[in-house]
Length: 115
Length: 117
Image 1 (cartoon, one colour):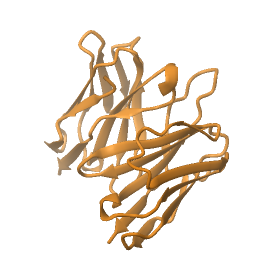
Image 2 (cartoon, rainbow over the protein chains, first blue to last red):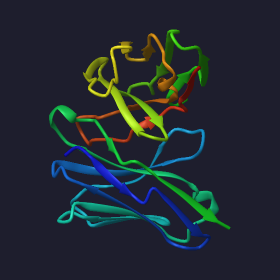
Image 3 (cartoon, helix red, strand yellow):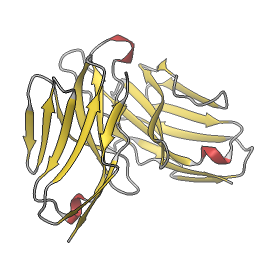
C-alpha cells in the first residue's frame, strides 16, 4: 500500500513534443505528490509538486495533472527540449503518522529528447 | 547556503572493508534521509532521522549497515563488512518540516558513488 507505480520506464520524444509520465498510488492517506528531476551524476531535485485539493498545477512547461478518484497523477512536459533529458521520479507522502516526512518514490522514467 | 554536502564523492574499496559515508545537511533542517540508488532497485530509502533521532530504519538492508547522527550537522552511513552487492550511489537528503506550513521538499546531496570490488 506504500508503493507508487510509475510508467513508462523510458521515454523518447522529439524536440517540441509532449512528454507524459504517469504514476499511480494505493494509499489514500498520501496528500503530497512531488516530481523530482535527476540529471546524470547529480542528486534528484524537486521539479514541481501538487496537493489533492487541486486537479492541475502548471509551472512553465511542466504540468501535473491529478485524478484523486483514480489515484493517479501525471507529469506533462510541453515543448520538450533536449535539456529536459533526465530521469524523472514521482513521489508521495502523507501528513501524519509514523511516516511523516517520508517520501515514497516511483521507479523512475528515463526521458530522452532528441533534437 | 552550500546545500547538502556528501563525502567522499567516489569510493572504491575491496570486499570485507569498512566503508563510511558522510553527510552534512542544510543548516536548520530537521530531517535527514539516506537513500541508495541502483539501476535494478531504483531509489531506496534506507533510514531517516528527525532532530537527530532515527525514525524509520526499515530500509536498512542488513546488520552490516548502520547510520548515526551525533548532531544536527553531521550524519554517517557505515557498511561493515562491505560486499560487491553494496555497489551503488548513496544519497543523503535533508528537509525542513516546520509546524507552520509543511515544506516537504527534500534537498539531495550530490551522492557518493561506491564500488566494492
